[in-house]
Amino acid sequence: MTTYKSIYAQMAMSLVSGLALLTIPNKLIPLLGVEPTKEIWIYGIGLMALTLCFYYFQIAKTTDKKVVMGTVYGRIFFTTTISILAILGKAPLIFLPLQIFEFSLAMWGWWETKQN
Image (cartoon, rainbow, N blue to C red; front, side, top):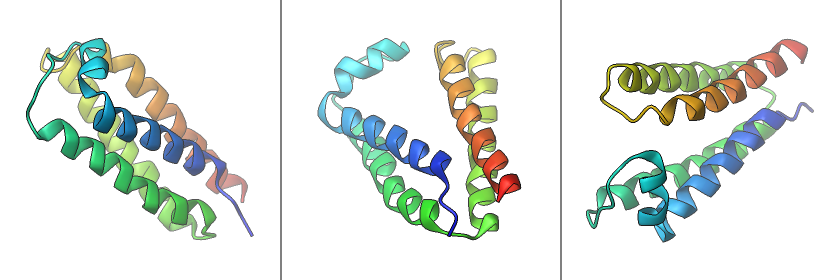
């Protein structure tokens, strides 16, 4: 059975991000150039990141390359969109290195589907 380690890495990133956004959001988001907030949206994003962990865990164990490629396409779309927003000045430029890391995880997933 194939195990997609890149998806486990993606799950770990979602877990850390989600937990940080739920527990210490106003210590994390200023590092990203975003003003601290008391609004609920930041907790919602943390919950979404944590919810993705359930999906990633199941996907990492699957042998279905199409499902893994679905995550690759989604992550490429996400990284491209956030990068464009940063380049246009709609998001802080610090987001660019984070998107390079995210894109690297997506490419690792793509590579794993080609190897298996």
